[in-house]
Length: 148
Image 1 (cartoon, rainbow, N blue to C red):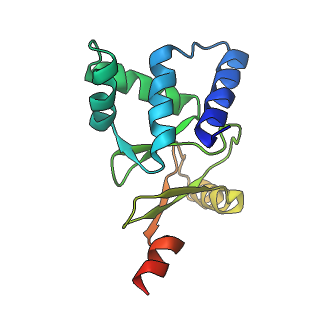
Image 2 (tube, rainbow, N blue to C red):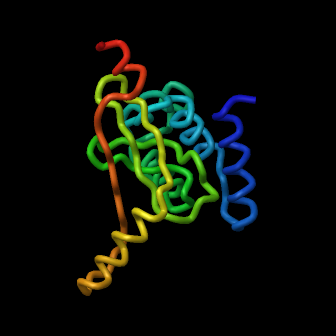
């Protein structure tokens, strides 16, 4: 079973247990993102979807993305305005992304202590954190090895 198939099964199970609908469009958007391996932009998703669903329009994609983000199944890469599948949808804490600037590969980290420290610092400053995005950009191990 592929990693994408495993993520789709987890997503289906998670949506069922939460009582939310995992529609065919939502499933397909998640599948396309999961199979990509790196960040995928909304209009790239729309291009892929429109070959399969003639009625696919930007609002269709954005609604599906909003749902997937709300359910913790997809993360938005802020710096690229792109989306990546969550490697651990059952994980409820913060996350960090390692983004390769050469090949586009994205790796998700779960360093809870980093998220907790930032949240505690913000709280001491009287700041209420609503969303936390930590993106580290550089070269992945494979791209670094190729350039040496």
